[in-house]
Length: 386
Image 1 (cartoon, rainbow, N blue to C red):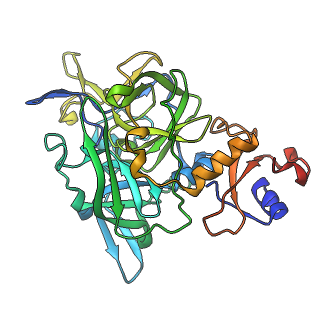
Image 2: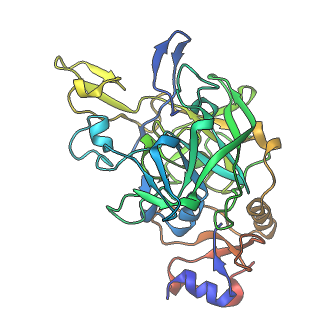
């Protein structure tokens, strides 16, 4: 029996912790900066590699697809995803490039903030950024469960209940040098198993605060970055964003950016640097070329942890008035009041992990607790709650 089951038995509860980044190029509107790459070492992990806490957070994110790329089969109750090429073939990447064998299909990321509300980046849609997107929000599907559940098993199909349509824009703002977000109401409520996430309603994060993100880089299945790898570089509160060194790519636009210590969402991933670099026959370097097949096989753009332009994140405070206070947010506030440790670990650490338990097992009434990945470390039952 693993630690989750052990604690669940002790507590009689179920564990439920609970556009694309635009390419850097010149347009008639001037220089646009937006995708992202690797700062320092590559801290991304697939769903199956992450701790269960992070998996539960990832369950509350959704990938954005064109409706023509998802085929709903009402009879079977499934949705097939048209992914076609691999990342390696699409971007003409070198043999052995990380994730080069994975398929792609989505164009942006989003996260659940209410029973039928998601947040993403406004520039993902042509209604707000016609120079950068050719996709209407009315032609977008929001797909939960787009994950790699085990090594080599790619999500060519998901349950039809995981697919949602656009209903209305609650609020949106697009400033390519400032805040960039869209709050969208879905066509129906998301089942309780995928819980609305918690946001920071207070001050902007401090410079140096540790961060991680969960999203769909380059249209791949969900990736979770290591909470120890990235931090806040600078804050432009007046313009509504801050700069980080998160590892992210085109397709991460709209991803939630979490504070590694509080587990609260600090912002919406919006803009960044170069994704992939290639060289021509003369050895000249090209950044995110439009037709990468005409160059030598390329690779992800890697810079030092403190180098490069960084990634811009819209402050969640800019849209907090449009987002309801969730049960998860209340539970985190209660954990803080009880002094329950909420600091996030490394994705592969075996130490204590912060958790939220749901005594009734139906998606509400979260209770702060502590999850022990190694059952040998579990203290007496009376020690589980503080």
